[in-house]
Each structure stands twice: as structure tokens, then as C-alpha cells.
Length: 555
Ligand code: HEM
Ligand SMILES: [Cu+2]
Image 1 (cartoon, helix red, strand yellow):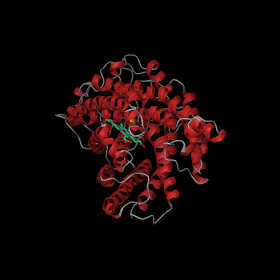
Image 2 (tube, rainbow, N blue to C red):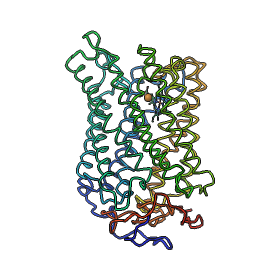
Image 3 (tube, rainbow, N blue to C red):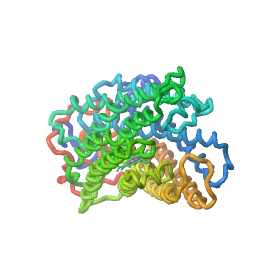
Image 4 (tube, protein in one colour):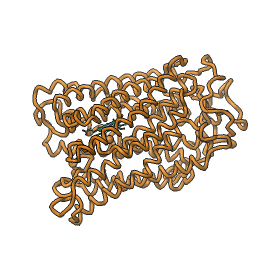
């Protein structure tokens, strides 16, 4: 995707921070809090999500400390319930769902398609404020004693019996949902209407396709959870009989509504990560993604089929066995587009000239962990097996392999990959690799034993367990601390790099794409000196020989 209008920096990158960038376009707090620049809004999200991540992680470490011993030594059962609920709520609604779209998507979508901003910059800023208001609700609830229903808010426990801040937290999740809907809407309109001349649909980077599919789910599914949470609040607040059987309601209805959103929502969490992986693989393998259009359409396929599988969360809820069989079959089908992607990424790497920088470490980590997560998803999709494994640690391990091993791994990789573009500085490559390695090892040590302990029958959401299961839990707790260190390192070296990192230059990875080839690092407020005109297909690496790769490292 080269353009004619802007001089290229291919031969001798000018390695100094440009004088005009989005970062030095105003230093006041107001210039940040009232910014309409998609890149600054991305940074606002990054700061907020980093704080939520640290909070969510602290709750996780508390859970793991409690589970170090079989008895309830550290906290009461009620406190423990609040710990895992706050952990799940914060991680799902305030970290996993927004992380890649709101940070990397906001920053990169306009840059990748050659636009000056998103279609509705004011709406974009408003989405951040809505996100923060929702977050404040949940944090207030945490301060006033938390909530103990699990992130799933199952009725009638949540609507009648729970003695904790259900309305405040469900209200927070409800409000945050609008931020997700509006961001999705903004991206859809941006991708439809703001592409630079020559940027046809099939020249779009796969990151854009992944975000397009994600945005469709955000717009179509999120209203369902919004209305579900609203009904829950009405039942709890006003005693309306919607889910409470004593008042003529149907508790299973809640589960249907909840999972009708929350299964598609798991794809809101993973599809953007898949988009990030496609970009990084094309760059490290220095070739076009194998089967570009298959990868693009498999994102849409996942988004569409994902709407018809929610019943696999409800095999033991009393739903009809025949419904279960149909849900089981359709769930298996959704694995096909995921497998297509994994195959195509591997085929791209095969015979590619791979360079092993930290983004590649995260990419390899993603591929391995995502496959384990996906395959164990198929175990759970098999109705007969799931009756045994439902609500055990096997499920916990499955979704952490996908969401942490997959999505967070991709997010970390993407952050390392685009960090030089976002800040203009390189991070210390050595420490990037150490972090990726610690995360990979710590992750497996934490979650692999949970497959075993779940399979032998340890239920989730209890603060005690039989002593013979302790060995697996000790491994998990030890691994969680290794994982914690792995995540803490980037906080330190990223901040360090802002001042001391080597100046990156416009395209340190010698990557293809408008964001790398047609603008500076960091980009100016208006993104491009003049509108790029696209004349190439995506990922035309052929005229960028491997020998030209400039390593983005300081050491
Ligand atoms: C190949 C694709 C996948 C299949 C076949 C699959 C299958 C399943 C099944 C059958 C369950 C229900 C288990 C039970 O509760 O007894 C489940 C739970 C779950 N899955 Fe997956 N899954 C897949 C991919 C994903 C992805 C991509 C994510 C997230 C990004 C994800 C996140 C979750 C979560 C969060 C739960 C548990 C929710 C809860 O009960 O708290 N799964 N999966
Ligand atoms: Cu599901």
C-alpha cells in the first residue's frame, strides 16, 4: 500500500522525533480531556484500561492466595465470592471487551485506511466518558462492599437473594455497554465511508476486517445484554416478576438472554486479537497472509455463527436435549472458521523469512494457547462431556486459554508492535522477550493444572476444596505470580522508553501499511501530510527484502 503523495523513508529513515505530533499538540489537561483526536482518545482508554487491569489482577491474586490451601484460611466464603465476581466483571467488561478495539482500534483504524479521524469524533470522545461513568459505578460498588453474584448475574439469586451491590454493578455494566455500541457504530461508518482513494475492501488490512466483524457484534448483541440487565435491575429494584419464579417469572429466560449476548461477546473479545495477529504474522513472515479473503470472511463467519450457539452454556439448565444437540452441532461449526485462520497463519509462517522480535514471541504464544483454548472448547461443546465438566475448573481453564492466552497475548503483542508508532520510541527488546516468555510460562503453570483439577471434579466458585487437589492449586497460585511479574515488566519498560527509548523512526519494522509507510512516528494530529492514494494490495512485502529489516531494539 504505497502512496504517491508523501515521500517514503525507506532508504534512510530519519531517526528523530518529528517536531509536530499528536502528542505535543497541546499539553493542558483540557487538551486531553476534550480532545477529538482518535489517537488521544486511544491513549485515554489505555490509561483507564491499565488501571482496571491492575485492579482486576489484584482480585485474581487474592483468589489464588485463598486457593493456595484447601481450607478457607484467608477469607470468608462471602468475601471470596466478591473477589471472583469483581475479578470477572472488571476483566470482561472493562479490560477484555474494550482493550483492543478501544485502544489499538481507535488509534489504528483511521491510520490504516488513510483517514484523518473516525467518522464521528465527538461520539468517540463521548464513548470514553460513558465508559468512565460505567467504570465509576462499578468502582463505587467495590468500595461499598462489592457484589457476589458472579459476572453472570444469574437470577433469581441476583434479583432476589444476593445481599450485595447488584443494582450498582449491573447499572455500571449497562452504561458501559453503550460505549461499546457507539464505538462499534463509529468503526462501521468509518470503515464504510472514510477509506482513502484506492483502498478497496479487499485491500484492507485484516485488522480492519476483524474490527468490522467485531463492530457488527457490538452493535447487534450489546443491546440484548443492556435490556437484560435493565430487566434485572427492575426486578430487583421494583419487585417486578420477570425472572423470579415466585412472582411468575422465568429464571431460565435470564440465562437465554444473558448468553445470547455473552457468547457473541466472547467473539468481541477474540476477533480483534485475531486481527492483530494477522498484521504481526504478515510483518514477521514478510509475505502476504495466505488466503487473505478466507481469513477476512472467516471473521464475518465467526461473527454470524456466534449468534446461534448460546445454548452450549445451558446444557444442564433443563433445556431440551434436542435443543442441546442442535447447539452442540452449531458450536462445532463455529470452530471451522477459527481453524481456517489458524491454518492460514501457520501456512503464512511456513517458508516465510521470520524474524524473532518480541511481537513474534507473543504471536507464537497466541497460536499455541489459542489452539488449546479452542480444542477444549470443542470438548465442552460435546453435550455428554459438558454434563460432567460444566461449572468445573475445566471451563475456567478453557476460557482463560482463549481470553488471556489468546486475546491478552495478542493485545500485548500488538502493543509491542505498534508502540514505536504510538510513542515514537522503541522499548528494550531484551525485556520484551523476557516479558513474553514469563507470560507464556506463568500462564501455562497457572491454567494447565486447572484442566486436570477440573476434570477430576473441582467445581468453580468455591473457596475450599478437598486436600488431594492441593498440588494443582499450588501450581496455579505459583504460576499466577510468575504471570503477574510478566505483566508488570511492560508497565515499567514502556514508561521508561517514553524518555530513554531509542527513537523509532517512521517504520522500524519495515512493515507494510499506511500507518507505517505514509506517516511519522508518532503521527501528526491530522495523521497524514496529504491524503494517501493506495495503489497496492495489502501486505505487498515482495519489494522489501529481508536484509532491510531495521531492528526495533535498543540493545
Ligand atoms: C472453538 C471455539 C469455542 C468453543 C467450541 C467453545 C465452547 C464453549 C462451551 C461449550 C462452553 C460452556 C461450558 C460450560 O459452561 O459448561 C464455553 C464456555 C466459555 N467460553 Fe468457550 N468456546 C469457544 C471459544 C471461546 C472463545 C473464543 C472465548 C472467548 C474469547 C470463549 C470464552 C468462554 C467463556 C468466557 C466461557 C465460560 C463462561 C462462564 O460460564 O463464565 N470461548 N465455551
Ligand atoms: Cu459460548
